[in-house]
Length: 224
Length: 224
Image (cartoon, rainbow over all chains, first blue to last red; front, side, top):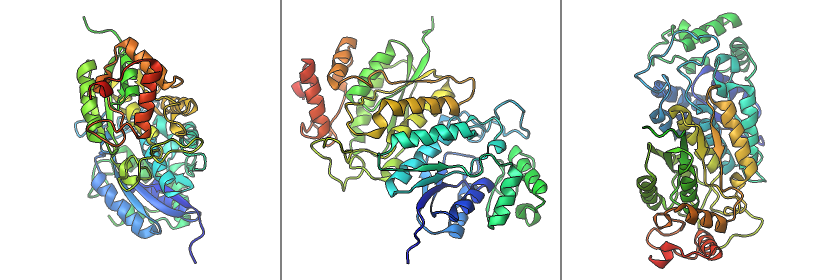
């Protein structure tokens, strides 16, 4: 008998948040997994992790989209090798890793695919606290995006934008992932390296702190 | 003395509407012109027209973005050569030329570029009546997109989404273009051909009717 669950597009980068969001979505939906290459420094590693997540969660289709125009447009240390990835978040300021309007581009791609394949949801592992200062990680941004998707697609298309982790702390995300059996060993967070986590960039530090707060061991650090 | 006008990103396809919108914007802004290749059938012709419009209106930068993933995602006769481009609009139904959530993708690209280069506006030549049934050509869609851009960019970024033609009839657009000296001879509308307008597809018919209603002669038809 065919799986009667509805179909969802899940945006997955290969990081902890999207891994947990995928595990969350897997309980409710058949998954169409989407990865976007936007010219980020660590894309080779992200893609490797994405492909592993697809193999792990695999049920429906997967799609890899080239949106490397975002890297060409520039304006971010995450895509421009000439800019330095900072070690610390500066409270009240937007980190140089912010990629202008990136998440809106990712959501627009996800919604276009979702409408085409008849998916009923787009699931995104955005965590507001995990991206301090990023304007496109706030709940109000996702509410506005939900409205845009509703207005900008066919009247008989009904896509709900789901952000199950948006108000969680990073430690809560890690705990939820552990409960759901999310395969953390397949994920990657470091902004700088593709070999071993640098453990110094802001992203590595947030990951380390989250596992510590959750009282769990990060498999990437235990068995690097 | 440097031009003191603010900077705007103008989305230009090479068609009549974006030509008139560019002429409109040229009076208010310095122009950063943006063309997006999304895998449309007549991209070679559109790009030729875009480059001519850049040469005509030229002042600031221009950018051509490859978003051909939209064509790969499919779902439209405008990007899928296996589907037929219809001759007539069917009232109350969405034409097969509708590309799922295309305009949101175009706006997301335009806003990312606008934020990066410090533009204060994104100008789009969308005309509601010209795209009957397209959900992403309605004023309410652009209002929601404006809100998304406002929420999804840095607090000190202020980008206004401008749709000067949105409530005009196609004939009014042609009349406004004539007043502003818009170079209609450099534009292209036909969905099917890149040599001479087919004069049968829905897009050719709308163009022909608009020039007739406006009491003007289309230079493409007069001197093909």
